[in-house]
Image (cartoon, rainbow, N blue to C red):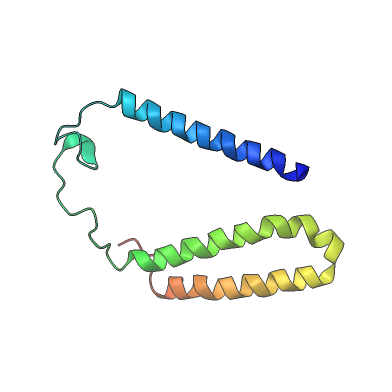
Length: 116
């Protein structure tokens, strides 16, 4: 049971911290006006709805970004253990990069790299 005392203390400190931040926000809040409650553009009236759809040309670009982002997410821990695992880790990484390259080629073919 003594192993959980530290975790319980950290949980209590976190809850107290959250409560203090919430209490501080409630006591120091300024009364909101309709202009101050607009979601963006520093009080200017929005020209479109905040939940409006994006143009379809952005979706292939998003796939391209995710391909590179996921690649880096897995390459950092892989670089730490590649010396221990050996050639199998290198082969697995190149297979993974090949799968991601399929996504990049698809996005390229769809025109994600054309800006006009």
